[in-house]
Structures are given as structure tokens and as C-alpha cells.
Image (cartoon, rainbow, N blue to C red; front, side, top):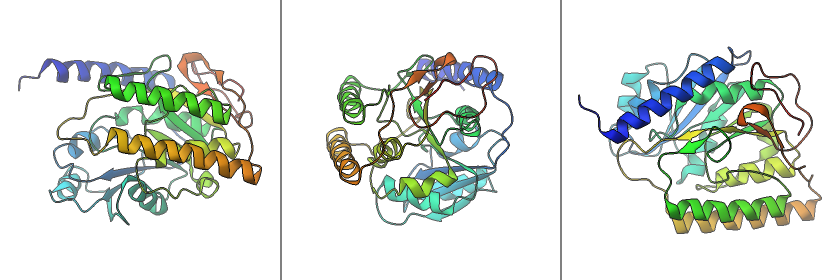
Length: 290
């Protein structure tokens, strides 16, 4: 079947990124759970599930009352996956439902629309295994990129990112992106409660305030495969802003820990706070001090 220029470009970029990841990381020592929130993603879910690497031990699809055959197509593609119903509306509720059902030592969250390549998962797991509590993807650090972001979204992300770095004395390079992994034992300290897209910001804010060890790794944002995004730029941007201010105020009143500035790490990854991580990364993936 003939591919469009956009599909060919996406496929080439994803393949190059995947080759880089495989060259840099090895097999994980802990178990890995992948949480995939999905609502009406029947046209995209098979593409995502077919690219899950062998390091993932369980896949949890959180179905947000889809009116299409999202769950059926997911089961057909990956019979071993677990489908759980979403508890409450919104992406935040979907993710929290998945987290509570996950059994792995490391939990990775990824979107079901094809904008995040599962082939990058070993990169996140690698840094979790080497002492980091939270690992978040960055489209704007060395080696990262986006084939989808609009000028408006980029401007909004940049403004919210600058405010985050000011309020939390951090040095993040990306904020509004939900490709994140964390250690299971960090979940209680994050104490996530958001119901919408702002849960991604809540996770980062609480990790920094708690003094958890946070790293950014380069990621490539791909275009959504088909359909329309559930993201609403202005509405969800306002929710992110409220989350930033609320968490900073709550952290100040409770005397929460302050994160140190981030140190760059070879290969484009960055350590962004908390204690020094144990171990090192092979090849070009040496860790820096947080």
C-alpha cells in the first residue's frame, strides 16, 4: 500500500530512534507494566500494541467507555493484555486506574493514538533501573523532536515550562508531554489526584517537591495516526497553570523539598533533582549528578 510522505517520514524517524535505543540499553532486571489509556482509538491501537518491545511484562489498556471497538481490536492484536474499565472521566482518572492495576516494578504510561513510539520504552526503563524514580520524555532536549506540535502548542508549552522552572527552581526542557515512566514504589509519594490532562504536570511537580530523582530523556513525538485529539489547548492549558500554582503553594505550606537544578547527561538525557542515581549507563548514556 502506498504511504504518504508524512507516513514515510514518520516511519523513518521512528526506526532511527529505535535503533539508537537498542544500541544504548540492555534487558531490564525488574518487571515492566505499560499503561495505555484509550477512548475511541480502534483505528490506532493495533499500531501501538504491535510495537511493544519484549522488555514489557504486562500491558494494561484502560478503556474510557469507547463507542468503537477499541478493546476488541486491542485483544485481537495482543491477547495477553488486560482491559480494565476507566474509573471516572478524563485522562487523569484513566491513568490512575491503570496505575492501581499495574503489578510491575516499573510503570510506563503511553498514549494510544500513535504519537508515542513504544520502541522507546527500553530507554525509560534503563534510567529507572539506574536509580531514577521518574523518567519523563522531552521533545526539546538533544536527540528529541516533534513531527506534530503546532506553533500555538509550542508557545504555550514554552510559557508554562518557564513558569515551572521559576517556581520549582528546576531546569526542565519540556513539560506538557505525557510519555513518562516511574518506579512503582514512587507512586505513593506522588499521591496523584488529577482527573484530566494536567495529571502529567501534577506528576512532575510532586516529584520535584518530594525530592525524587527525575531524569529527562529525548523522545520523538509522532503525528497522531488517525482521528482527532481529545486535547483542548486553552482549556487544558489553564488546568496545567492551576496545577502548577496549586502544587507550588501546597509544597511551600508543607515545607516540601526543593529540587536542585538539572545537570546535562551525555546522549541528551538530563538529571533533574533528588539524590545521585546509582550505577551508570553504557556507551553514550552516562548519568550525571542530580
